Length: 124
Image 1: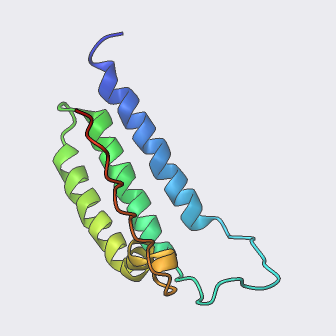
Image 2: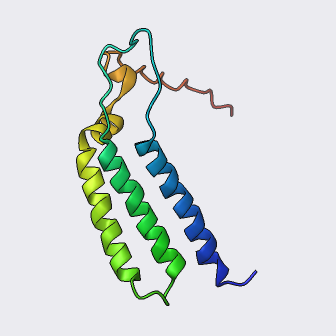
C-alpha cells in the first residue's frame, strides 16, 4: 500500500460518517413509546443543525480526498468550519443537556464517601 492512499481511505471513512449523520437528520424517526419514564422531557435536537454538521463532515472529507492537488481544499475546510459552527449553535441546548446531565447527582443522591484507609501494623 502506498502512502498516498492513506488520505483517500481516511477521507472515505469520514465521508461515510458524514453520510450517516445526514441520514440520521433526514430520515423520519419512528419510535413510539406508551409512556415517558423520565421525569423531565428530553431536549429535542435541531434536525437542520444536525444536517449542517453532516455537511460539514462531508466538506472535511472532500478536503481530505482532494489532498494538496485540489484547488478548492481551503474553501471546503472554511465552508465545513462555518457549517459545523452553525450546526453546533443550532443544537446548543441539546448539547448542553447531554454534557451537563449528571444522573444520580442531579436527583439528590449524594456520592458515597470514600472509607478511610485501615492502619497497618509495622512489624519489627
